[in-house]
Image 1 (cartoon, rainbow, N blue to C red):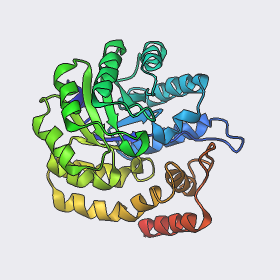
Image 2 (image 1 turned 90 degrees about the vertical axis):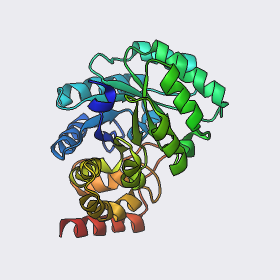
Image 3 (image 1 turned 180 degrees about the vertical axis):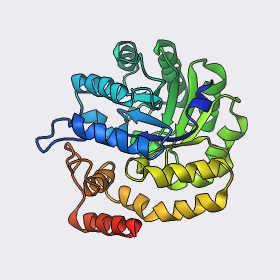
Length: 296
């Protein structure tokens, strides 16, 4: 089965729950894992941006990978986030991280350096050679400071064997259409933007790697499944049901929004590691109001 078939639908980029003292809360992580799988997501991403991975040390990252794979227990595929702006270091991490039970690696484009398109191509080509499992490119210009052009994505897709897909979070619909039109048949293309998931699936995407699916796993993954079946009326109804919640998830920063929702659902504590801080009180009150309406 190709990666495109394995990861069709909704992937959820898991939060990393913390205790009041900011230590990693593995008990709460298990509750999140069980909640999203029960809600119907097709796969899980650990150590993504939503997991506040830049604030985790290497020992914590290893523990989280081991724990997540153990608790998921093959119920759904697990994708591991391994990225950075030092190509050599990322290649070393791909060799040393515990990836035996992982299906693929999700690797964000180098941040801050602002490499040229050729630099981005060479970066991913080297990662593909170093990785023991397929690599999914992650294009998120709002965080990295540079865009991966459609031309570079397609060049990687056609020329580099172990590059198996892309999470596209550029927000550029035309760029996404060029990728979808010209990609290889088995190349996975998923949305990295919860708000745009429905229209992007209508254009041909295979699903989403989602923040919202942490706290709205059933509604969001049902929306994606309806969209993939081209039942756009049912998908649209759920899209608009989730719209206010999606707005609040990104009102101040991610994952402050999703952690507020998960706190109100009784699943985790509302704790982040600096430099991120919890939602301001006015936005938190909107989260409470939104959840109340969703339960009516």
